[in-house]
Image (cartoon, rainbow, N blue to C red; front, top):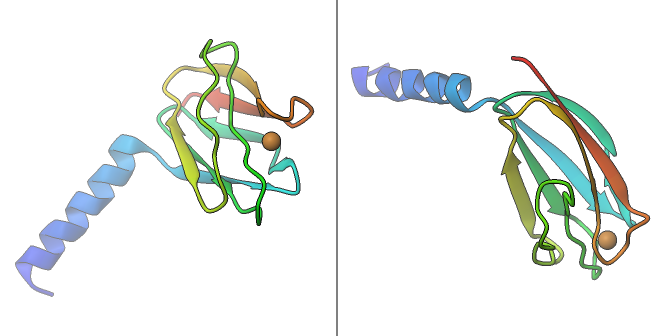
Length: 106
Ligand SMILES: [Cu+2]
């Protein structure tokens, strides 16, 4: 392995440590799956709409007063969680769709 490759590899490892993990939540058939996740502070949650036609969004009403833009099929919505706590969210157009993100210490 060349020195440049080793350097790039080290950078990648450092990035993972600095920015945390990425966790994917799929939106399908009007459900968030998994509906509840536990992550570490600094992790990124990425919601992916894998419906054929239906749009949704991911609305943390307690954190953001304004409703976010709709998420159309094949679009994703990443959020980094740096604060500890339990954060509930729902889908604006479908308030019965609910989810919970629990953020714990690293
Ligand atoms: Cu929805």
